[in-house]
Amino acid sequence: MRITVAGAGNVGLVTAVCFAEAGHQVTCLDTQKEKIEMLEKGQSPFFEPGLEPLLEKNLASGKLRFSTNPRQAYRDAEIIFIAVGTPEKKDGSVDLSYIYIASYHIAENIENDVIVCTKSTVPVGTNEIIKQIFQNRKPRHLKVDVVSNPEFLREGSAIMDFYLGDRIVIGADNPEAASIMEQLYLPLKIPIVVTDIKSAEMIKYASNAFLATKISFINEIANLCEKVGANIEEVCYGMGMDKRIGANYLQPGVGYGGSCFPKDTKALVQLAGNVQHPFELLESVIKVNQHQHSLLVRKAKEMFGSLKGKKAAVLGLAFKPETDDVREAVSLTIIKELLEEGSMVTAYDPIAIPNAHKLIGNSIEYTTNIHEALKEADFAVIATEWDQIKHLPLDAYIAYMKEPIIFDGRNCYALKDIQRYPITYVSIGRPTILNAKPAQRL
Ligand code: UDX
Image (cartoon, helix red, strand yellow):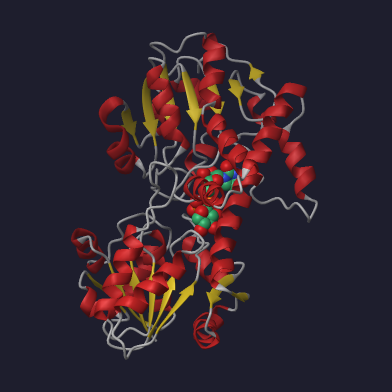
């Protein structure tokens, strides 16, 4: 099929590349010229494992092309995916201006009947407005079917998720359009849910809100474990074995971040408020998450009294491993609070430094060498569970730090391993180990 994808962000670009790989003729459109120039050279503007080789391959075969020109991109498309950004407004609601602009451009430039498929996460009711836009602006003789097709890709495993997702959701009013979309996805052999448009829109929000709820719930249990002397690892193991609960998204830590959970939970609270149905449970989930972001700095303050003049090594800037994305990353809150407390910060990350630098600037030092970050540090804070951090030998903390004191926000190390070293170790929902002995440096 001839497919056009509007938006070359995390969702749009992965969608474009994977449909090209599946044999379709795909055009990916973005308004940012520099981004398109990079992509035309086979370079991805963000890191996603496995994406660049597929990008290069499909560019070379001619199955995938890029454009900044709406006429060229939309003119003869059979299916158009809208995958543009839906950023958060100051009040927590969703800024839909990019969605509407894309819809105007589509309506003005199509020359064939087309299915317009919304992949961006949009509040319930948005596709109704998109339908109105087409009714008002499209050429009279053309038929435009609007379909909701929310995306469940995770950054860092997006390509795998495209091929091995748990389900595909298609929300459509017109059975013919739904059937064409089903045919498109059939080769992936992923279960397909066909439903009405509003339910499809809600499935996306409810799924993300539920996963966020699971994370905040387990973080609260972890905090309780600390108070009563239980171990969250054992608790998660025991809970996760119950198939009704499941072990996924039960990993305690310093809270969720990223471009989706924080934004989508707030948007759902807004949506509920708009229909006079306050979503108190989700409001608490958000509050718990914000509190969790500050947990390690609070613990460090408790231990040291004051953090003024202390040198902190922050390990991990990306909001999760295998991505260079720092949007709503917990590391940002940790760094901000450490600076407010008067600490000096050196941050380590293997790939997210350029993006972090855009937000934090030169108020901290950056390094891609973990040892460098640890050098003469008074304490280390683990914010992201990168493999490079999880597999860092514990000797390194002893060899490089002033005193080996670790605040681990992702429970990267087993307590029994830590116990063999003269290290002080504070983690999430597990007993603190107070073993640091500065005299025993290697
Ligand atoms: C999420 C959804 O999973 C995906 O379906 C949707 O399309 C976009 O939003 P993403 O934000 O890329 O994906 O990453 P995800 O792996 O879900 O992690 C989100 C955040 O939750 C991260 O900060 C991660 O560290 C945190 N998390 C995840 C936990 O704290 N504990 C867990 O058990 C799982």
